[in-house]
Image (cartoon, rainbow, N blue to C red; front, side, top):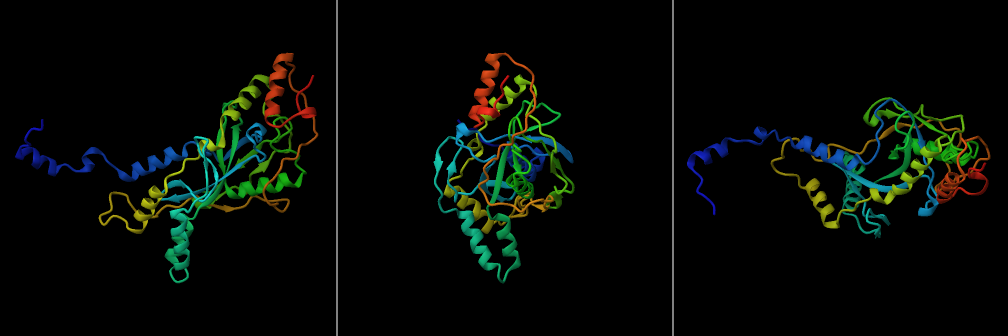
Length: 316
């Protein structure tokens, strides 16, 4: 049963503003974006050494990365509906018309006479992102992360792996670490000093650590990252861009933010080759600590799930 509201309470309600509750919509939108992107590792230091893990043959993977297409609108990522891929529930999403793509196409046409429309079209167009599994050297190396490769870093890896001169860069036993060297910020971030290690090393020289890493990697499927909005939900996003609120709430600025861009490419020693890139196995050898037969068998079984077999497995 509702009680009557007194005149004094009504007056108080009118005097209360959202600021009294510490409400900051800009901060809220940023927190939502962080929640959507925290599933990916982000470099916090200017120099980070990491190891890119190999594809899992058991999952039908042939490439060391997985591509997905995403729109960035007001700092929020939205999977493009015009792509065919598995979602986080293991359901196959068939490519369908995407409302954001449709708007971007219209804006591109308007861009012939309207520079602002052209810029907006570039901001909201779907960007292809390559995701890899990594471990971080010098930290908890049993923890596996997803990392969205900057475009130029991805091309650098494709170029050098395709050349064959670096061997199998992502091989769990005969691969190489990768040093991510970052300078600048935002759209001026530069990774041109990043490089592959000249040394061939295993993921880990410790058998238990390697088992933990490979097991965790198998449980981190790429499709677990993919969530599709409904067409109606994306239409609402488009409508908000086209018809922003007449009285914008605190911090709201239509299309002020765009997806991060990279400014310069790492130096390439070979011309890039077209996808897909099949891994080339090297023939270098090195020693790992001795293990018991049953433990060695378990490790070799896991390596088999990654498509590593025969002479490439560990034998004693």
